[in-house]
Structure formats: C-alpha cells, structure tokens
Amino acid sequence: MPNTKSAERRMRSNERKHQHNRSIKSNLRRVEKDYRALVIAGKKDEAAKALPSVHSVLDKAVKSGVLTRPTVNRKKSRLAAALN
Image (cartoon, rainbow, N blue to C red; front, side, top):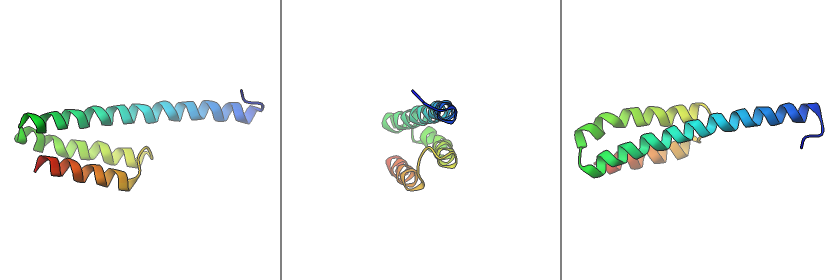
C-alpha cells in the first residue's frame, strides 16, 4: 500500500496505463491471430487486404508506447514473409 498521497496518485495512474496497454495488446493479438488464420487457410487475397490494417495497429502500438519500434518492425517483416 502507498504511504503518501503522491504514491496513491501514482498507483491510480499506473493502473489506468496498465489497463490501456492491456487493451491495445489484446486488440493487437486478436488482429494478428485473424491475419495468421487467413494465411494458413490459404486466402491470400483477403490476407493481403488485411495486412495494411495489421501494420496500422502495430504502428499505433508504437505510437502509444506499448511496443518498441524494433519489435514492431520484426513483427511486420515476419507477417509479410508469412504471406509470401
């Protein structure tokens, strides 16, 4: 438990950030899973259309500080390679 007022505020702030980051990561996992399912099913046309939206979600995760740029670049590269 926090001992000071500022520690209490910090704890509330950290919890809000934690929930925000979790929602972004959860959405990211769902989008990535849907994309990989399309690739595995052999639906290349639909997967090719879905790839830009997956990239967009990944870039937004970087913008909000949830993931780092190198991690996202690696994921984007591997997703594109899976399509090819």
